[in-house]
Every structure is written in structure tokens, then in C-alpha cells.
Length: 237
Length: 243
Image 1 (cartoon, rainbow over the protein chains, first blue to last red):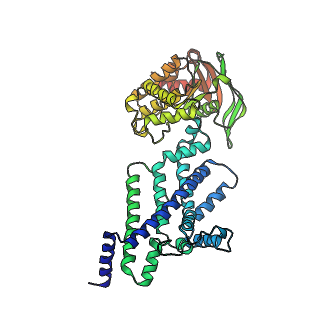
Image 2: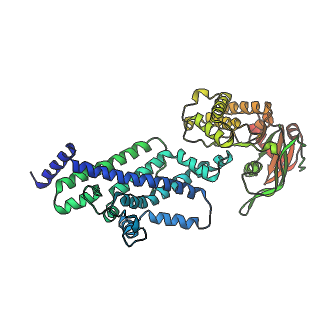
Image 3: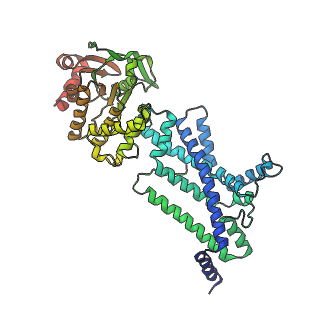
């Protein structure tokens, strides 16, 4: 049996036996990315709805900036968060560098523009269709936009899943601010990078298979949710 | 052509020299109009004559010059649009949201009772738990009417409420409107359908090129020779829509 086939076999055995190191890493990945998406969802959905409803000078510039942030490199986010929370940084006294909290903050910053920009698009599309009528019924601009989040909830769920997919599969930010400490800040992506460099292919492959399964599951859920519900396409602009 | 003005009952809403401009286009020019309590006013006119803009101006949802005065008794208004926007919720929840928005003072139990009453009024009780967007066009328009009726508006505005409906759905909606009017609700509607205007309205406002060309009691509007474009409009439209 080739080395690769042997590694795959060992990887599958690790998954089947729920290897403690594997489970711990996967659990932390979900906790960090889930927490980041939860935080970013609160801020991003409100920001997206507000941007769709508000009319102010410079709004177009703000939207352009938000669109630009969609392509924010994760290592840049990691670097900024690292500099902010390092001992000599402005928030160094918080002492949260190399903790899961710092990783959550980094991933929140990473996915916030995605959620805000895409929810803005979803809400703006909805307001074009029914904003006047909701306002005629007594809703303020902001309330009409918030109702659109409810109206377009399947599209909102889809964009949140897309944001989770982005968070759980990124490596740059969590590597820099988490430090990849075994049992403390090691998540799937950083573990794959480390185990591959060490030559421990079975664990790296097992984690890779789990990560791939997670992303596939997210895509499947998005496809099922979008099917037949008239969910507007959530597109990267 | 003479722009005769019908004298309304107790005024609820009035416009004085009101104009609406969209960029370089003046959609409504120097409109003066009084809507009295219990009136059923139909705004008629050709495409692009300013019917819908005048309706929105009366409803107070477009920026305008001139004066728009609303009596305190007419503070609550509702509008039914040509294509009603329904939230992706059940029929009943759409009503509950409308009541939450339009009748803020009501307790939750009262809102639920009103929603049930409104559903019964338009004959949609059996479909209360269905997704609103899965309803037929006629049912959706009846839901839109229920939504507006449920907040007990002093004035109900309707923008071509039957324009996209088949004859049977049209009849159902007209019959509901006739019921609202009989109950004394003040109604202002824009319509292409002169037959409908004749059946439902107590007064006709004829729009021509953004101006009010005539404002007459229904019987007079159809009996008088208004002259000019109004006669042409009546002749052309009567030939296919007056039943």
C-alpha cells in the first residue's frame, strides 16, 4: 500500500474512532468560527440593514469601502489584531493574544464585511420591491429594512453559512493571533499546516477530510435552503 | 374644458396648489382637491396622466410643493397597491405585522382578534396558515385589502386595485370595496376601468397631463359633455371597459 493510501486509511480510522486530539481541534474550530459568525451576524446584519435604509452624504463611498473589504486578506486581519493586542499594542493590557478570544475577534473582523455587504444587498433588493409599501403601512426606513431581514431570512441564512465557511477555512488570522498552541488555540486549519510540515500526514488528512466535509455540508445546506424558496442569489460584487 | 369641483362633505384631506416633480418632469401640477368623509373618489385618466402620483400625493408619501392638509380625524390612512407586497410569512402573520405597524397601541390579543376578523371579512380564514406568497393574485389582493381594513383607516387609498386580476377576482375585490364604502369608509382609488369607477365611486377626478381636468359627482361626470381630451378619453375607454 502506498504511503498516501496508508495515510488516508489512518485518517479515516482517526475519524471513526473519534481521536481525542482530532475532536478537540474540530470542537475549537467550531467554537471559534461559530462565535465569530455570531458576533459578526449581530453587527453585520444591523449594519447591512442600516446601510440599505439610510441616506447620507458619502454612502456610496462607504459601500465601495465595504465591497473592498470583502477581499480582506486574513493575514492582514491577523497582523492588525496581533499589533493591537501585542504587549506594546494599544490593547496589549487586555492580555488576550494567543487565546481563542483573540481568534474570535480576528475572525469577526474578517467576516463582518462579508455579512454587512451581502445583507445590504439582500435588504436593498427587498426594499426595492416592497419598501414603499412597508413604509406606507407605518414602518420607518430602518424598521422596513429590518423587516426585510425577516422577509429574506433564507438568503440571510445562506450568507451567514457562507461567512461561517469563510471563517472556518481561513488559516492566516488564527495562526498569527492564536499561535497554534496545542490544546489551547489549535484549530483545524492551523493543525493541518503544522502536521503537514511535521510529516504527520494521517492527522493532517483526517482534519482535511473533516474540514472538507464541513464545507461540503454547508454548501449542501445552502443548496437545499435556496431550492424552491425564491432565495435571491447572494453574490460577491 | 371646465374643471368643475364637487363640494365634498366634512373635509378629511385637502390639497391646495400641490405639485410633484420628478427631476425635470412635473407629474402633478397645481392640484387642488378636497376629500370629504365617506366619499368614494375615483381618479381616472390615461396612462401617464398622473393618477398614481396624485394618489401618492394624497397619501402623503411623495415630496411636493403646495399645501396638503390632513384633518386630525384622518390621521390613520392605508394604501393598497396594484401589486401588493407580501412578506414571506403566513397569511395571518402578514396581517399581524400590518397591525403591529399600523395600530401600535393595540395589545397582542387585540391584534390577533383583529387579524381573525379581517381574514373573515375577506374570506381568507381557511388560508390563514398558508404562505402569503403562494396565494393567487386575487387572494393576494384580498389579503392586501384585509391588511388595510384591519387597521381601521379613516381613508383607504387604492392604486389600480384590480388591474392585474382576472374577471372573477376583480368581482370579488370590487364587492369587498363596495362593502367598505357602504360601511362609510372614505376611499380614494385610481383606476383605468371606467365601469368600475361608475359602479363604486361617488365622485370622479379626471387627470390629464398632470392636471386635474375635471372633478365631478359620478353621475355628472358620465352625463356631461366635458369636451376636448376628456370626451376622447371617455369614448375610447368606455368602448372596452364600461360594463
